[in-house]
Amino acid sequence: MKKMLLLLLFLPLFGWAQDSKLINGYGYLMLHDSKFGGGVVGNVNLLNQYLGAGPGVEITSYNGRTLVPVFADVKLKHRWGMVEPFLTGQFGYNAYNATRTDLVAATDGTSKPITFNQSGKFFYGAGGGVSFHLKSVGIFASYIYRGYKYSRPTLVDVDNQAVRFGSQSVSANVFIIGIVF
Image 1 (cartoon, one colour):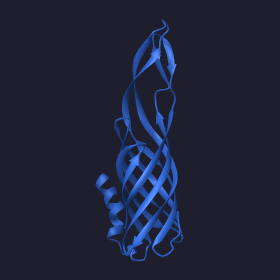
Image 2: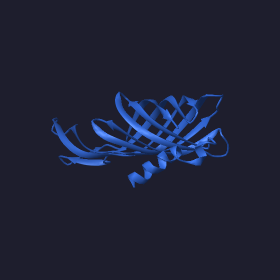
Image 3: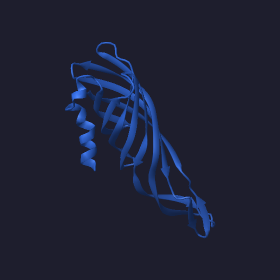
Image 4: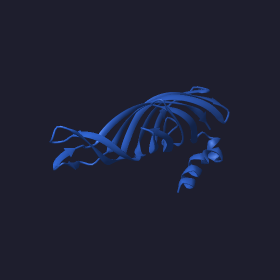
């Protein structure tokens, strides 16, 4: 499945649509809240050259654990010669799973360690950037603000006392630089 997804994302390099600018691919390095990562995004122009959408996948980290966001990327763009500014929106699932330990107050007034599972739910992102096209390959830079939701157990029992967690919301700043083909 992973190989098929990567093949689909890199297909614009080999497709006939690349010549007519119907398909673009983005390969990049990123700084995800001071952690390095990378990713690829495919982008197909939908109704016209101004609106594009496609799949994306990244590898980065959160709290020392691997984070793999898989998402749909939507771009609103306009090209003037070699320069193409764009606005982007990303919506998807963050594949993340970690065992966490936290201290909670017990009924006797002490803090007790509990262990629970934290997993990724969904995320959204919005941002903008600019591409500089040279013939069939170019460079781009962008910034995206992301909001992540993480799932934690709703109820954990500590000394016959219920501790409620609920979901956790986290935001991240993502700076991206890469190639567009």
